[in-house]
Structures are given as C-alpha cells and as structure tokens.
Length: 309
Image (cartoon, rainbow, N blue to C red; front, side, top):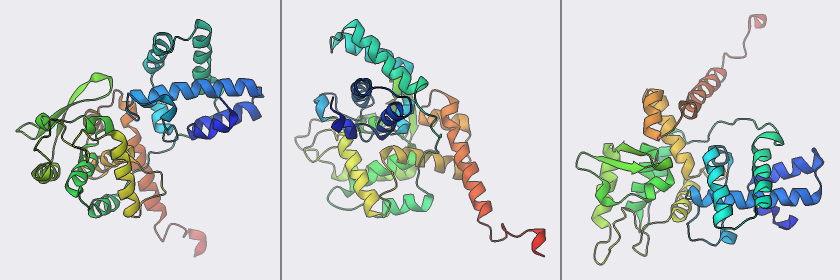
C-alpha cells in the first residue's frame, strides 16, 4: 500500500495512522503495514455489514463512509470471521494473520488515542417532516415508502433492502432478519402501511420475477448503495446536507423520536431496534439529557444571577 492511498481509508483510521507515526514513533514501513491490514479488515467489514455488495471487487470498495458508529459496532466474532476469511479465501500465511491480529487489536485497544464518545446524529421531528415533504420524481412513491420505514421503524439498511412484498403479513407486521441472523417482528404503523400501499399501486408487475418489495429502475432488488445515494440526495434537497447525516442516521432518528416523543421504554426500544445489549440502546437517554440541558441553558433567564440585582 502506498502512502498516497491513505486518503481512501476511513477518517478515523487516517487519524490513527498519523497518531502512531507522530506520537508513538512507529516507522514509515510499520505505519504502511498497519494501513494495509486495516484496509483489508474494513473492506471485509464493509461487505459483511452490507455497505458494499458481496460480489464487488475489493479495490472498488469505498471505505470513506466507514464512520465511528460502524467501527464501534465491530464485534470479536467479526474479527474471528475475518481471520478465517484471511486463511481460507486470501490464503494468508500464519505470520501474516498474526500481524493482522496485532494491527486490529492495537487499533481498537492499545495504541489508539482516547476517542470522545459522541452522540449519534439525528433529525429533529420538524427536520424529519421536511425530509418527507421534498420527496418527488418518478420514483416518489417508492422513495417515500423507503424513507417512511426508516423514520418510523428504525430498520437497518440491509434489513430494508432484503424485504420481500410477501413478508408483509395481513396483521401489518414483518418478520425481518437482523444482525447475527436474529429474527424480530416489526409492527408497521399507519404511515408505513399507507406508504407501502401507495407504492404497491405503481410498483412494476409485468415481467417482474423479483419478489423484492423495493425495486430499482431495472426491476431488480434495490441495492444498499442506491438507497444511500437516494437518501443523500433528498437530505441535500431538504437543506440538511453537510451534517454527516446518512441512512444510518435515519435509524437513529426513529429511535430518538420514539424515545423522546413516544415515551417508549428502553427495553422495548432495544427489541424494536434489534440491539443485542441494552447498553447500545442507552445512548438515546443521553440524547434526551443533552437536549434537555441545552433547552434549559437557552432560557433567557439562564445568565441572570443574584449579583445582577
């Protein structure tokens, strides 16, 4: 790997490489080896988390959209599966696999500088409404249904694109398969049911063999990348671009709105989102605390003290 290719890595990895060279004093060769190992690892993660199609050439995988949320979601099992992939698919030697273990472990635990735990980005209620209001064009029914499901159900991107129209039951539920092949039931509210009904009226049928709910312009299952581009375009159109918002942030938005406005219990929210651990869900309590603190601090009386009498 050449140094000029570092810019193709996730921003957090770029920052890490600068840190270990400038602060930790690693040699240039060592830094390049770390960069190469981490590039291989996150290319694997990108495919496993359905950020890139499984049949993509690894050199075409875009790693710049790997953010701290995705990096933090990596599990020990992901690392184990990566090592199996390195042995069976890449045919890496034992020495190479051992080096990759060191590179990944140090990135996550030993050498990496302390990273401030940031609150997930999300849309306010008014911003979410604005996003829905700008959806138009020849695929407006499809796009509206997709974004409505994201904002109301908090689905993951991979979960949404995998839905078949036959998955929707008569009682308005869908059973979807999330991370770790764990199934959970999603209950569709009226907004979701109305949006899907409107879309199904215009969804192509003649000659379409694909059972996917959401189709591309080629009448094939819509790809995760196409959904990402579509959402990004509408965010820009709604005046919400440039804030690091993405499809995954719509999932955060759904969770935040349910917690802040729907008085949803954390345990219930955990089940809705398909989180393995309650600790992952608890981030939304911090969002509420932060929003409450900011609201109180914005009170025009906040700066008045008894000494001002």
